[in-house]
Length: 432
Image 1 (cartoon, rainbow, N blue to C red):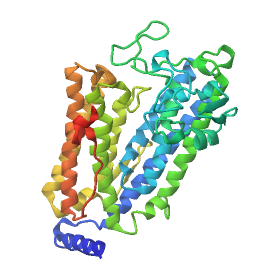
Image 2 (image 1 turned 45 degrees about the vertical axis):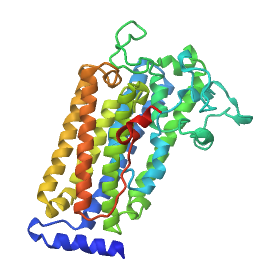
Image 3 (image 1 turned 180 degrees about the horizontal axis):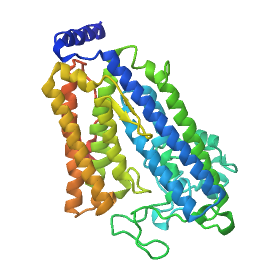
Image 4 (image 1 turned 180 degrees about the vertical axis):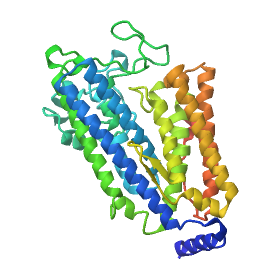
C-alpha cells in the first residue's frame, strides 16, 4: 500500500507540472538499465582485449608484451569503474561485485613478496601461503591440492578463504598484482627501474621474466602464468554473467524496470552510497587520515586517481541519462535530471552543479597525479598541497551527497539508507 501511495504521489507531482514535460519514471529507469547494460558490455569487451594481451604475454614474455598487458588492464578499468554507480541499490550487482573488484588483497597468498611484508598474520592464516610456489598447501590442518591452478581452485577454494575478504584470488586486482607486482614505494619519491632510470609511475616493478620459463625470475614462472590465465578467464565469465543480468528479462533489469519507484530508489541508493560512504569515505578519507598507501584502490598499478575519477563519471552518467561508450557511440534517454527538473528546476540545477564541481575536483587530482606526484604521494603525511587536493575531492563528494539526499526527499522516495563510513561519521573510531 505504501508503495502504491508513494507512486501515486510521484505521478501526481509530475502531472502538476506539465509545462516541464516530465519523462515517465518508467522511461527514466529503462534508460538507467540500458546504460548499465552498455557499461558492462564495454567492461566485457575491454576485458576480452586484456585476455588476448595476457595470452600474448604468456606465449612470448617480453618488456613489450608485459607493457601491452598492463595498458590493456588500465583501459579495462575505465568502463568498469563507471559501472560502480550501479552498486548498492541492486542486489544482483552487489552479490556479484566481490568476484571481480574485491580489494585490498593480501598478495602473499598468491605469490612471492618482499621480506618487509612479514611471515605471518594473526588475522589471516593464508597470509603467505604463496599458492604459485606451493602445489600442496596446508592451512590450519587442512590440505589443499594446488597442483593445477584452475578457475575452480581460485573461485571455490582460495577466494575469500576462511571467510577473510583479504584473500582475494579473482578479479581485476589479482590480475593487477600479477602484472605489476608489489608496490614497495611507500609515499617517497619515485624509484628507479632495473636499468637505473626513474620510473614514470609509482607502481610495482615486476619483470617480464617472472613469466618466462627459459629465464625465470621469481621462480615458478609457468605456474604464475597459469594463475594469471585462470584469473583472466574467470573475469570474462563473471562479466558475461552481469551483462546477461542487464539484458531484457535479465535478473538485474527485472529488479528495477517493473516497478519504477523501486528503480528510482535503486538509482539514488547507488549514487548516494558510492558518493559518500564508499568513495569519499572508505576509498579516500580513510587513506588520507592514515597517510597509508595500502589504502589505494589500484595500488599495484598506481591507477587510483583514474579509478576515483571514473567513479564520478559513472555517477554523472546515471543522473544525466547518458553514457559514452568506448567506441564513441552514446547511449542516452529519459533522465533522472529531467525528472528532478520537472519537480524542482532549482534542485536539478544544484544537483548538476554539484556533480560538475566534484568532476572538476577529481580532474584536478587526476592532473596532479599525472604531472606532479602520484596519488600515494599525495596522501603522504606532511604533504600539505597533495593532502588538500585529495580533501577537496572528498569535500565535493560530501556536498554532492547532500544534494542527492534532497533529490530523494523531493521525489518522495521514502527513507533510503545510504552507505556510511567511520572516516566521515566517527573519525575517532578509525584509530581505535
